[in-house]
Amino acid sequence: MQGGFTNPAETGVEMKSITLIKGDGIGPEITDSVIKIINAAGVAIDWDIQTAGADVIETEGTPLPKRVIESVKKNKVALKSPVTTPIGKGFRSVNVQLRKELDLYANLRPCYNLPNVKTKYDKVDIVVVRENTEDLYAGIERRVDENTAESIKIITRSASERIAKFAFDYAVNNNRKEVCVVTKANICKLSDGLFLDCARKIAAEYSNIKFREILVDNCCMQLVQNPNQFDVLLLPNLYGDIVSDLCAGLVGGLGIAQGANIGKDYAVFEPVHGSAPDIAGQDKANPTAMLMSAIEMLNYIGEKDAASRIKLALFETLNAGVKTADLNGNASCSEFTQAIIKRLAVLVK
Ligand code: ATP
Image 1 (tube, rainbow, N blue to C red):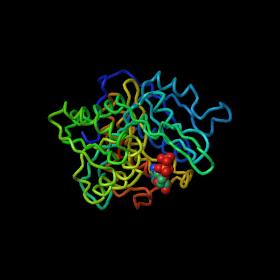
Image 2 (image 1 turned 135 degrees about the horizontal axis):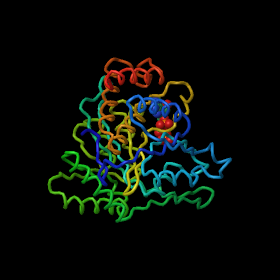
Image 3 (image 1 turned 45 degrees about the vertical axis):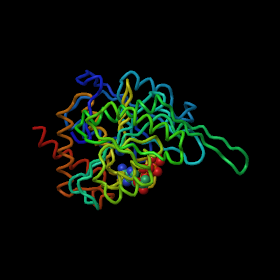
Image 4 (image 1 turned 60 degrees about the vertical axis):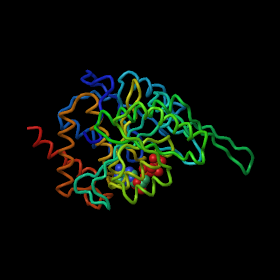
């Protein structure tokens, strides 16, 4: 299935209590939209609502209180909307901390054309598998002196082999043909070199999946020239962040780009985009990225029928030309949501 994957612990788990992290910026708007749609699809979920980010620092002294982590540990699954990360200063990214604390080592970002979303490219179907726990995101930085700063890039064998294995298993389980590892191993010879070596080692264990290697700069050029040549991309954390935004741009932008953070024990589903403060509170945001992430969450917990119904209602809505401004439409977030709910009502009957 496009973009789909199966809970490694096999699904069918009776797990209807789910953590909901509402976030900030456009977070609350797109969350409300998605919850209304899931309710309309007839899925009964006991949402354990948790707040995080700048708004809770004053009262709780941290942007990511322990209760949020405990809630995800209890429920095993979370749906999360974006939480703003301050640029250049301020607290450490809540997203990064959450991924580290829960050891959500795989960031999965499927990227394909949606119906009636016209872009320069057709038939794009790429899955970005991004290592989620180390690289420059380890946050080890220091100011050497007034004019010099340094950041340390951490790449370990265990994390690199683990994510390579995830990418190849994903390829096998989802009928994919090729995994392409993306590095800058000609410059970062030791760190990216290790990531590449690990990918080569794991690739040798999967004779049915083609293995390809590419440098990240060439990969970016190839993506904008001919994205159809790519299947599963395997990247260290930072390149994965950048290249997945590029891939989102190929198929219609951040408003439709879904994501999931998967670990051995927990999974957190969230859109690729940030909190989009420039359009927050204006009823302009596209909830599709969050909805597509929620659809994968429903698949993950075994609610496959509801997931299919919601996807069909979303696709029919787009096909009918109801679209938000980022897709050159004129529907507000709430009008788009209502249009999906209206179609769901027909499908649910
Ligand atoms: P972060 O670093 O936190 O991931 P970012 O730098 O990727 O954030 P975003 O907050 O994702 O930035 O926003 C980038 C641009 O995309 C903004 O112009 C924003 O309005 C737009 N955008 C992001 N998400 C959506 C959405 N769901 N609907 C419409 N536009 C969006």
